[in-house]
Image 1 (cartoon, helix red, strand yellow):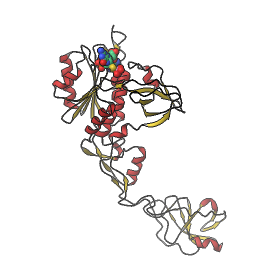
Image 2 (image 1 turned 135 degrees about the horizontal axis):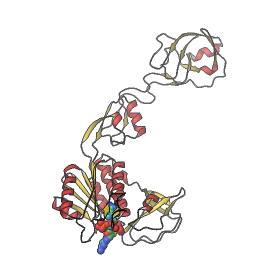
Image 3 (image 1 turned 90 degrees about the horizontal axis):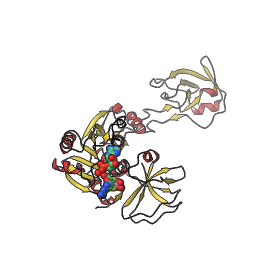
Image 4 (image 1 turned 60 degrees about the horizontal axis):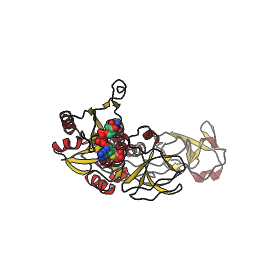
Length: 394
Ligand SMILES: Nc1nc2c(c(=O)[nH]1)N[C@H]1C(S)=C(S)[C@@H](COP(=O)(O)OP(=O)(O)OC[C@H]3O[C@@H](n4cnc5c(N)ncnc54)[C@H](O)[C@@H]3O)O[C@H]1N2
Ligand code: MOO
Protein backbone atom coordinates (compact mmCIF):
# COMPACT_ATOMS: atom_id res chain seq x y z
CA UNK A 1 0.00 0.00 0.00
CA UNK A 2 1.24 3.48 -0.79
CA UNK A 3 0.75 6.58 1.34
CA UNK A 4 -1.76 9.35 0.70
CA UNK A 5 1.02 11.76 -0.33
CA UNK A 6 2.45 9.25 -2.80
CA UNK A 7 -0.95 8.60 -4.34
CA UNK A 8 -1.74 12.30 -4.56
CA UNK A 9 1.63 12.99 -6.23
CA UNK A 10 0.76 10.42 -8.93
CA UNK A 11 -2.59 12.11 -9.63
CA UNK A 12 -0.99 15.57 -9.66
CA UNK A 13 1.68 14.45 -12.14
CA UNK A 14 -0.98 13.08 -14.51
CA UNK A 15 -3.37 16.02 -14.22
CA UNK A 16 -2.23 18.14 -17.19
CA UNK A 17 -4.70 20.43 -19.02
CA UNK A 18 -6.55 19.02 -22.03
CA UNK A 19 -6.73 21.06 -25.28
CA UNK A 20 -7.60 24.75 -25.38
CA UNK A 21 -10.73 26.06 -27.13
CA UNK A 22 -12.37 29.45 -27.62
CA UNK A 23 -15.76 30.27 -26.10
CA UNK A 24 -17.90 33.39 -25.97
CA UNK A 25 -17.84 35.29 -22.72
CA UNK A 26 -21.49 34.38 -22.11
CA UNK A 27 -20.55 30.69 -22.10
CA UNK A 28 -17.36 31.08 -20.08
CA UNK A 29 -18.74 30.86 -16.53
CA UNK A 30 -16.57 28.48 -14.49
CA UNK A 31 -14.09 27.87 -17.29
CA UNK A 32 -10.33 28.27 -16.83
CA UNK A 33 -8.36 30.76 -18.93
CA UNK A 34 -5.76 29.13 -21.18
CA UNK A 35 -4.09 32.50 -21.92
CA UNK A 36 -3.98 35.79 -20.04
CA UNK A 37 -6.87 38.19 -20.61
CA UNK A 38 -5.43 41.49 -21.86
CA UNK A 39 -7.29 44.83 -21.82
CA UNK A 40 -8.32 46.03 -25.30
CA UNK A 41 -9.58 49.43 -24.07
CA UNK A 42 -8.60 51.88 -21.36
CA UNK A 43 -10.96 52.06 -18.40
CA UNK A 44 -12.25 54.63 -18.10
CA UNK A 45 -11.65 55.63 -21.72
CA UNK A 46 -11.29 59.31 -20.67
CA UNK A 47 -11.66 61.34 -17.48
CA UNK A 48 -15.31 60.88 -16.50
CA UNK A 49 -17.67 62.28 -13.91
CA UNK A 50 -18.38 60.14 -10.87
CA UNK A 51 -21.60 62.01 -10.04
CA UNK A 52 -24.58 63.76 -11.64
CA UNK A 53 -23.82 67.49 -11.51
CA UNK A 54 -21.89 70.26 -13.23
CA UNK A 55 -18.35 70.34 -14.62
CA UNK A 56 -16.46 73.57 -14.09
CA UNK A 57 -13.06 75.06 -13.33
CA UNK A 58 -12.17 74.58 -9.67
CA UNK A 59 -10.41 77.96 -9.53
CA UNK A 60 -13.69 79.71 -10.49
CA UNK A 61 -15.43 78.63 -7.28
CA UNK A 62 -13.41 81.20 -5.33
CA UNK A 63 -14.94 84.00 -7.45
CA UNK A 64 -18.35 83.37 -5.81
CA UNK A 65 -20.18 84.27 -9.03
CA UNK A 66 -22.96 82.29 -10.74
CA UNK A 67 -21.95 79.98 -13.62
CA UNK A 68 -23.31 79.99 -17.18
CA UNK A 69 -24.54 76.54 -18.27
CA UNK A 70 -23.11 76.17 -21.78
CA UNK A 71 -23.97 72.59 -22.62
CA UNK A 72 -24.64 69.06 -21.47
CA UNK A 73 -22.73 65.76 -21.52
CA UNK A 74 -23.97 62.18 -21.06
CA UNK A 75 -22.13 58.88 -20.75
CA UNK A 76 -20.99 58.21 -24.31
CA UNK A 77 -21.82 61.77 -25.51
CA UNK A 78 -19.19 64.33 -24.78
CA UNK A 79 -19.60 68.13 -24.79
CA UNK A 80 -17.33 69.27 -27.58
CA UNK A 81 -16.65 72.86 -26.48
CA UNK A 82 -14.18 74.14 -23.89
CA UNK A 83 -15.19 75.24 -20.40
CA UNK A 84 -13.88 78.77 -19.98
CA UNK A 85 -13.88 80.98 -16.89
CA UNK A 86 -17.39 81.27 -15.33
CA UNK A 87 -18.87 78.52 -17.49
CA UNK A 88 -20.09 75.08 -16.56
CA UNK A 89 -21.48 72.00 -18.31
CA UNK A 90 -24.39 69.95 -17.03
CA UNK A 91 -23.28 66.30 -16.92
CA UNK A 92 -24.30 62.90 -15.65
CA UNK A 93 -22.49 60.04 -13.94
CA UNK A 94 -20.11 58.42 -16.42
CA UNK A 95 -20.07 61.38 -18.85
CA UNK A 96 -16.67 62.48 -20.20
CA UNK A 97 -15.30 65.53 -18.45
CA UNK A 98 -15.32 68.47 -20.92
CA UNK A 99 -12.06 70.13 -21.85
CA UNK A 100 -11.13 72.98 -19.47
CA UNK A 101 -13.07 71.58 -16.52
CA UNK A 102 -11.23 70.05 -13.59
CA UNK A 103 -14.02 69.54 -11.09
CA UNK A 104 -17.57 68.30 -10.80
CA UNK A 105 -20.01 69.87 -8.35
CA UNK A 106 -22.85 67.51 -7.44
CA UNK A 107 -26.33 68.71 -8.34
CA UNK A 108 -27.49 68.62 -4.69
CA UNK A 109 -25.06 71.51 -4.00
CA UNK A 110 -26.34 73.92 -6.67
CA UNK A 111 -29.41 76.00 -7.51
CA UNK A 112 -30.31 76.10 -11.18
CA UNK A 113 -32.30 78.90 -12.86
CA UNK A 114 -32.53 78.74 -16.64
CA UNK A 115 -28.99 78.90 -18.00
CA UNK A 116 -27.53 79.98 -14.67
CA UNK A 117 -26.19 77.79 -11.90
CA UNK A 118 -25.15 78.93 -8.43
CA UNK A 119 -23.28 76.85 -5.88
CA UNK A 120 -25.30 76.83 -2.65
CA UNK A 121 -23.89 73.92 -0.67
CA UNK A 122 -20.67 73.71 1.29
CA UNK A 123 -18.34 71.78 -1.00
CA UNK A 124 -16.04 69.03 0.13
CA UNK A 125 -12.54 68.73 -1.30
CA UNK A 126 -13.68 65.99 -3.68
CA UNK A 127 -13.51 66.65 -7.41
CA UNK A 128 -15.69 63.68 -8.43
CA UNK A 129 -13.54 62.76 -11.42
CA UNK A 130 -12.48 59.19 -12.27
CA UNK A 131 -9.24 59.67 -14.22
CA UNK A 132 -8.66 58.19 -17.66
CA UNK A 133 -7.10 54.70 -17.37
CA UNK A 134 -7.28 54.69 -13.57
CA UNK A 135 -8.86 51.21 -13.59
CA UNK A 136 -6.63 49.75 -16.34
CA UNK A 137 -4.98 50.60 -19.67
CA UNK A 138 -4.87 48.86 -23.05
CA UNK A 139 -2.33 46.03 -22.97
CA UNK A 140 -2.50 45.39 -19.23
CA UNK A 141 -3.08 41.78 -18.11
CA UNK A 142 -6.31 41.74 -16.12
CA UNK A 143 -6.56 37.97 -15.56
CA UNK A 144 -3.68 35.52 -15.58
CA UNK A 145 -3.80 32.20 -17.43
CA UNK A 146 -5.25 29.63 -15.05
CA UNK A 147 -7.85 32.01 -13.62
CA UNK A 148 -11.26 30.45 -13.08
CA UNK A 149 -13.82 32.69 -14.78
CA UNK A 150 -16.18 33.21 -11.88
CA UNK A 151 -18.69 36.04 -11.59
CA UNK A 152 -16.15 38.71 -10.66
CA UNK A 153 -13.52 37.67 -13.20
CA UNK A 154 -16.19 37.74 -15.93
CA UNK A 155 -16.83 41.42 -15.19
CA UNK A 156 -13.12 42.18 -15.60
CA UNK A 157 -12.96 40.20 -18.87
CA UNK A 158 -16.02 41.96 -20.30
CA UNK A 159 -14.64 45.32 -19.14
CA UNK A 160 -11.47 44.50 -21.08
CA UNK A 161 -13.66 44.57 -24.25
CA UNK A 162 -13.05 40.92 -24.92
CA UNK A 163 -15.78 38.95 -26.75
CA UNK A 164 -14.30 35.48 -26.63
CA UNK A 165 -11.80 33.83 -24.33
CA UNK A 166 -9.38 30.93 -24.81
CA UNK A 167 -10.18 28.36 -22.13
CA UNK A 168 -9.21 24.77 -21.43
CA UNK A 169 -11.58 22.09 -22.61
CA UNK A 170 -13.76 20.61 -19.86
CA UNK A 171 -12.96 16.99 -19.03
CA UNK A 172 -15.79 14.65 -20.09
CA UNK A 173 -16.76 12.51 -17.13
CA UNK A 174 -18.69 9.23 -17.05
CA UNK A 175 -19.73 7.81 -13.70
CA UNK A 176 -20.49 4.10 -13.43
CA UNK A 177 -21.82 2.42 -10.32
CA UNK A 178 -21.52 -1.33 -9.93
CA UNK A 179 -23.39 -3.79 -7.75
CA UNK A 180 -26.25 -6.29 -8.17
CA UNK A 181 -27.95 -4.78 -5.13
CA UNK A 182 -28.18 -1.26 -6.52
CA UNK A 183 -31.47 0.22 -7.66
CA UNK A 184 -32.28 3.62 -9.08
CA UNK A 185 -33.43 5.89 -6.23
CA UNK A 186 -37.19 5.54 -5.93
CA UNK A 187 -37.16 1.88 -6.96
CA UNK A 188 -35.36 0.10 -4.11
CA UNK A 189 -38.47 -0.18 -1.92
CA UNK A 190 -40.17 -2.43 -4.45
CA UNK A 191 -37.27 -4.83 -4.90
CA UNK A 192 -36.27 -7.13 -2.04
CA UNK A 193 -32.57 -7.04 -1.25
CA UNK A 194 -31.86 -3.89 -3.18
CA UNK A 195 -30.63 -0.54 -1.91
CA UNK A 196 -30.80 2.87 -3.57
CA UNK A 197 -27.72 3.69 -5.61
CA UNK A 198 -26.42 6.90 -4.05
CA UNK A 199 -22.68 7.25 -4.54
CA UNK A 200 -22.74 8.16 -8.23
CA UNK A 201 -24.93 11.18 -7.57
CA UNK A 202 -22.29 12.64 -5.28
CA UNK A 203 -19.36 11.78 -7.55
CA UNK A 204 -21.08 13.31 -10.58
CA UNK A 205 -22.10 16.46 -8.71
CA UNK A 206 -18.61 16.90 -7.31
CA UNK A 207 -17.14 16.33 -10.76
CA UNK A 208 -19.38 18.95 -12.29
CA UNK A 209 -18.53 21.42 -9.53
CA UNK A 210 -14.84 20.88 -10.37
CA UNK A 211 -15.19 21.61 -14.06
CA UNK A 212 -16.23 18.30 -15.64
CA UNK A 213 -18.95 17.84 -18.20
CA UNK A 214 -21.02 14.83 -17.10
CA UNK A 215 -21.66 12.85 -20.23
CA UNK A 216 -22.99 9.62 -18.75
CA UNK A 217 -24.03 7.99 -15.46
CA UNK A 218 -25.26 4.43 -15.27
CA UNK A 219 -25.55 1.35 -13.08
CA UNK A 220 -24.06 -2.02 -13.93
CA UNK A 221 -24.62 -5.42 -12.37
CA UNK A 222 -21.71 -7.49 -11.09
CA UNK A 223 -21.58 -9.43 -14.31
CA UNK A 224 -18.39 -9.59 -16.34
CA UNK A 225 -20.08 -9.24 -19.72
CA UNK A 226 -22.24 -6.33 -18.58
CA UNK A 227 -19.32 -4.64 -16.84
CA UNK A 228 -17.10 -5.09 -19.89
CA UNK A 229 -19.71 -3.56 -22.17
CA UNK A 230 -20.27 -0.68 -19.73
CA UNK A 231 -16.56 -0.01 -19.30
CA UNK A 232 -16.06 -0.09 -23.09
CA UNK A 233 -18.85 2.45 -23.53
CA UNK A 234 -17.28 4.75 -20.92
CA UNK A 235 -13.83 4.49 -22.49
CA UNK A 236 -15.32 5.31 -25.89
CA UNK A 237 -16.67 8.66 -24.73
CA UNK A 238 -14.99 9.98 -21.60
CA UNK A 239 -11.73 11.61 -20.57
CA UNK A 240 -12.32 10.46 -17.01
CA UNK A 241 -14.28 7.42 -15.88
CA UNK A 242 -15.28 7.11 -12.25
CA UNK A 243 -16.37 3.63 -11.25
CA UNK A 244 -17.80 3.00 -7.80
CA UNK A 245 -17.86 -0.34 -6.02
CA UNK A 246 -16.15 -3.60 -6.74
CA UNK A 247 -12.86 -2.08 -5.61
CA UNK A 248 -12.15 -4.36 -2.71
CA UNK A 249 -11.31 -8.05 -2.45
CA UNK A 250 -14.82 -9.55 -2.60
CA UNK A 251 -15.75 -12.39 -4.92
CA UNK A 252 -17.56 -10.05 -7.28
CA UNK A 253 -15.13 -7.13 -7.08
CA UNK A 254 -14.41 -7.08 -10.80
CA UNK A 255 -14.14 -3.38 -11.66
CA UNK A 256 -10.39 -3.03 -11.78
CA UNK A 257 -9.68 -6.25 -13.68
CA UNK A 258 -12.19 -5.29 -16.37
CA UNK A 259 -10.60 -1.91 -17.01
CA UNK A 260 -7.19 -3.60 -17.04
CA UNK A 261 -8.44 -6.10 -19.64
CA UNK A 262 -9.47 -3.08 -21.75
CA UNK A 263 -5.96 -1.65 -21.71
CA UNK A 264 -5.93 0.44 -18.54
CA UNK A 265 -2.61 0.65 -16.75
CA UNK A 266 -3.02 0.76 -12.97
CA UNK A 267 -1.04 3.67 -11.48
CA UNK A 268 -1.98 2.86 -7.90
CA UNK A 269 -4.28 0.52 -6.09
CA UNK A 270 -4.98 0.58 -2.34
CA UNK A 271 -3.78 3.47 -0.23
CA UNK A 272 -3.05 3.58 3.48
CA UNK A 273 -5.98 5.88 4.22
CA UNK A 274 -9.22 5.65 6.12
CA UNK A 275 -11.79 5.64 4.70
CA UNK A 276 -11.06 4.69 1.12
CA UNK A 277 -8.32 2.08 1.30
CA UNK A 278 -9.48 0.25 -1.88
CA UNK A 279 -9.35 3.34 -4.14
CA UNK A 280 -7.46 2.82 -7.40
CA UNK A 281 -6.35 4.96 -10.32
CA UNK A 282 -5.46 3.99 -13.86
CA UNK A 283 -4.67 5.47 -17.24
CA UNK A 284 -5.36 4.38 -20.77
CA UNK A 285 -3.53 6.74 -23.13
CA UNK A 286 -4.89 10.18 -22.29
CA UNK A 287 -7.90 8.75 -20.40
CA UNK A 288 -8.13 8.18 -16.67
CA UNK A 289 -10.12 5.74 -14.57
CA UNK A 290 -10.69 6.36 -10.88
CA UNK A 291 -12.07 3.43 -8.93
CA UNK A 292 -13.89 4.50 -5.76
CA UNK A 293 -15.02 2.20 -2.96
CA UNK A 294 -18.73 1.47 -3.00
CA UNK A 295 -19.32 2.60 0.57
CA UNK A 296 -20.86 6.05 0.05
CA UNK A 297 -18.79 7.93 2.65
CA UNK A 298 -15.59 6.29 1.37
CA UNK A 299 -16.57 7.12 -2.19
CA UNK A 300 -17.20 10.78 -1.39
CA UNK A 301 -14.04 11.22 0.68
CA UNK A 302 -11.86 9.68 -2.03
CA UNK A 303 -13.67 11.62 -4.77
CA UNK A 304 -13.04 14.82 -2.83
CA UNK A 305 -9.35 13.98 -2.45
CA UNK A 306 -8.49 12.51 -5.87
CA UNK A 307 -11.26 13.32 -8.38
CA UNK A 308 -11.19 17.05 -7.62
CA UNK A 309 -7.38 17.10 -7.87
CA UNK A 310 -7.46 15.28 -11.22
CA UNK A 311 -10.22 17.49 -12.64
CA UNK A 312 -8.58 20.68 -11.40
CA UNK A 313 -5.44 19.80 -13.35
CA UNK A 314 -7.21 18.52 -16.48
CA UNK A 315 -9.33 21.66 -16.63
CA UNK A 316 -6.33 24.00 -16.40
CA UNK A 317 -6.17 24.85 -12.72
CA UNK A 318 -3.25 24.01 -10.48
CA UNK A 319 -4.09 20.48 -9.26
CA UNK A 320 -3.07 21.63 -5.78
CA UNK A 321 -5.92 24.18 -5.90
CA UNK A 322 -8.31 21.35 -5.11
CA UNK A 323 -6.86 20.65 -1.68
CA UNK A 324 -6.17 23.89 0.14
CA UNK A 325 -5.67 22.72 3.70
CA UNK A 326 -6.28 25.35 6.33
CA UNK A 327 -6.02 25.36 10.06
CA UNK A 328 -9.08 25.11 12.28
CA UNK A 329 -9.71 24.51 15.97
CA UNK A 330 -11.28 21.31 17.19
CA UNK A 331 -14.36 21.81 19.34
CA UNK A 332 -14.41 18.16 20.46
CA UNK A 333 -11.62 15.63 20.99
CA UNK A 334 -10.32 13.16 18.39
CA UNK A 335 -8.92 9.68 18.96
CA UNK A 336 -5.37 8.66 18.11
CA UNK A 337 -4.83 7.55 14.51
CA UNK A 338 -3.79 4.08 13.30
CA UNK A 339 -1.19 3.48 10.60
CA UNK A 340 -3.73 4.67 7.99
CA UNK A 341 -3.90 8.42 7.39
CA UNK A 342 -7.45 9.36 8.37
CA UNK A 343 -9.93 11.82 6.92
CA UNK A 344 -12.51 12.66 9.55
CA UNK A 345 -15.92 13.90 8.48
CA UNK A 346 -16.70 16.99 10.54
CA UNK A 347 -18.93 19.99 10.74
CA UNK A 348 -17.81 23.59 10.91
CA UNK A 349 -19.85 25.26 13.64
CA UNK A 350 -18.63 28.85 13.36
CA UNK A 351 -15.99 28.65 16.11
CA UNK A 352 -14.26 25.49 14.95
CA UNK A 353 -14.77 21.98 13.67
CA UNK A 354 -16.72 19.25 15.41
CA UNK A 355 -16.02 15.68 14.24
CA UNK A 356 -19.19 13.71 13.53
CA UNK A 357 -19.74 10.98 16.12
CA UNK A 358 -20.13 8.13 13.63
CA UNK A 359 -17.30 7.70 11.11
CA UNK A 360 -18.61 4.50 9.46
CA UNK A 361 -17.63 4.53 5.79
CA UNK A 362 -21.05 3.28 4.69
CA UNK A 363 -22.98 6.27 6.03
CA UNK A 364 -25.10 8.51 3.84
CA UNK A 365 -26.95 10.81 6.25
CA UNK A 366 -23.64 11.85 7.82
CA UNK A 367 -22.52 13.08 4.40
CA UNK A 368 -25.31 15.63 4.46
CA UNK A 369 -24.16 16.79 7.90
CA UNK A 370 -20.42 17.01 7.18
CA UNK A 371 -19.00 20.09 5.50
CA UNK A 372 -15.29 19.71 6.25
CA UNK A 373 -12.73 16.91 6.24
CA UNK A 374 -10.08 16.85 8.94
CA UNK A 375 -6.73 15.39 7.87
CA UNK A 376 -5.06 13.25 10.51
CA UNK A 377 -1.57 11.91 9.81
CA UNK A 378 -0.70 8.25 10.41
CA UNK A 379 -0.02 7.49 14.09
CA UNK A 380 -1.15 10.97 15.18
CA UNK A 381 -1.76 11.15 18.93
CA UNK A 382 -5.21 11.81 20.37
CA UNK A 383 -6.14 15.47 19.92
CA UNK A 384 -8.05 17.26 22.70
CA UNK A 385 -10.66 19.94 22.03
CA UNK A 386 -8.87 23.21 21.31
CA UNK A 387 -6.12 21.58 19.20
CA UNK A 388 -5.48 22.93 15.74
CA UNK A 389 -6.13 20.55 12.82
CA UNK A 390 -5.84 20.69 9.02
CA UNK A 391 -9.16 20.86 7.17
CA UNK A 392 -10.60 21.29 3.69
CA UNK A 393 -14.14 21.99 2.57
CA UNK A 394 -16.01 18.77 1.94
N1 LIG B 1 -11.98 -8.76 3.45
C1 LIG B 1 -12.00 -7.47 3.15
N2 LIG B 1 -13.17 -6.88 2.99
C2 LIG B 1 -13.24 -5.57 2.71
C3 LIG B 1 -12.05 -4.84 2.61
C4 LIG B 1 -10.81 -5.49 2.77
O1 LIG B 1 -9.72 -4.89 2.68
N3 LIG B 1 -10.85 -6.80 3.03
N4 LIG B 1 -12.14 -3.49 2.39
C5 LIG B 1 -13.32 -2.85 2.94
C6 LIG B 1 -13.35 -1.48 2.59
S1 LIG B 1 -12.24 -0.53 3.39
C7 LIG B 1 -14.29 -0.93 1.78
S2 LIG B 1 -14.38 0.74 1.59
C8 LIG B 1 -15.25 -1.75 1.08
C9 LIG B 1 -15.33 -1.27 -0.36
O2 LIG B 1 -15.57 -2.29 -1.18
P1 LIG B 1 -16.00 -2.16 -2.70
O3 LIG B 1 -15.46 -0.97 -3.34
O4 LIG B 1 -15.69 -3.45 -3.31
O5 LIG B 1 -17.54 -1.87 -2.59
P2 LIG B 1 -18.74 -2.87 -2.65
O6 LIG B 1 -18.34 -4.14 -1.98
O7 LIG B 1 -19.24 -2.91 -3.99
O8 LIG B 1 -19.76 -2.10 -1.73
C10 LIG B 1 -19.49 -1.76 -0.41
C11 LIG B 1 -20.78 -1.29 0.26
O9 LIG B 1 -21.27 -0.13 -0.38
C12 LIG B 1 -22.56 -0.33 -0.96
N5 LIG B 1 -22.55 0.36 -2.25
C13 LIG B 1 -21.79 0.03 -3.31
N6 LIG B 1 -22.00 0.88 -4.31
C14 LIG B 1 -22.92 1.76 -3.89
C15 LIG B 1 -23.53 2.88 -4.49
N7 LIG B 1 -23.21 3.28 -5.74
N8 LIG B 1 -24.44 3.58 -3.78
C16 LIG B 1 -24.74 3.20 -2.52
N9 LIG B 1 -24.16 2.16 -1.88
C17 LIG B 1 -23.28 1.43 -2.57
C18 LIG B 1 -22.67 -1.81 -1.10
O10 LIG B 1 -23.99 -2.24 -1.10
C19 LIG B 1 -21.90 -2.30 0.13
O11 LIG B 1 -22.72 -2.21 1.27
O12 LIG B 1 -14.93 -3.11 1.17
C20 LIG B 1 -14.60 -3.55 2.50
N10 LIG B 1 -14.44 -4.95 2.52
O1 MOO C 1 -11.69 2.28 3.45
MO1 MOO C 1 -13.18 1.57 3.63
O2 MOO C 1 -13.42 3.04 2.87
O3 MOO C 1 -12.81 1.87 5.32
O4 MOO C 1 -14.61 1.66 4.38
